[in-house]
Length: 169
Image (cartoon, rainbow, N blue to C red; front, top):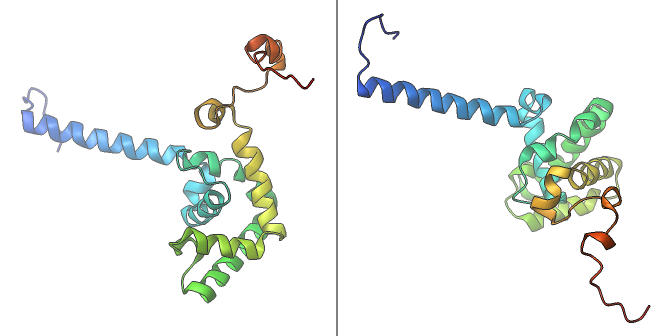
């Protein structure tokens, strides 16, 4: 209910309004972390996210780093991705009675992935994510301990990597 001009704001009303604003801000910021296609198709995004996290399991990496690289893949090969996910779900239902993403055991999900690992669908997702995850400078230092390319900064020798003792050379 809007306040009339000249109306005083009670402490309770102030806390209620600021709480609503804070909750709305959090919801808005969380929804902006996923790419547009993922927000438009949350079921597809959730299925691909489960698959991506099983292929490259990094718990500390945010969802958006898994989903963003898949954007061009979905644009180019949407039918392959949809058919591959459907096939994976079919295999999971036959083996475990539920869709792939609902299989609780990581070992059981891995066994399902081993069945399709040589297929075009799995290879497309795997190849897209390997570049998308490991070629993202934001993730290098924080998650992989990699400082990035060195040649622009004079090479590794001039940056503290010359302390190796290689006696066999």
